[in-house]
Image 1 (tube, rainbow, N blue to C red):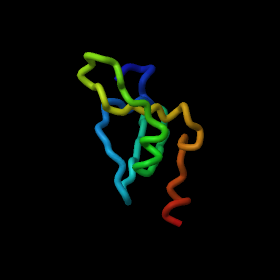
Image 2 (cartoon, one colour):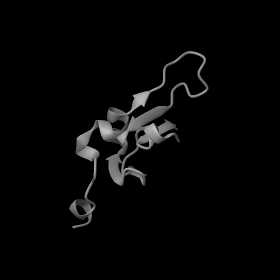
Image 3 (tube, one colour):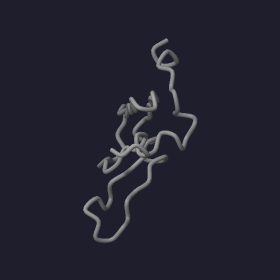
Image 4 (cartoon, one colour):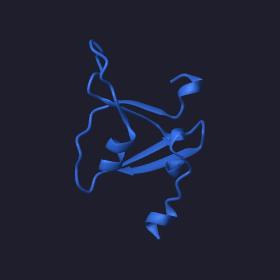
Length: 78
């Protein structure tokens, strides 16, 4: 991962599932994000580029959505 892409998580295969969570962490940025399966699909971009080896897979940037930047696990764990 290049310096400019430390918040990028790419080429992820996924279909919506109940009770399924994604936890993302970027050590360089000290940013953590947590998303439900459906939130991930709603926020992520799907690769539709013809001829791409990653067509149909999803990518997400943590920094683009401040709602998931620097997530506090205490809110979930109580």
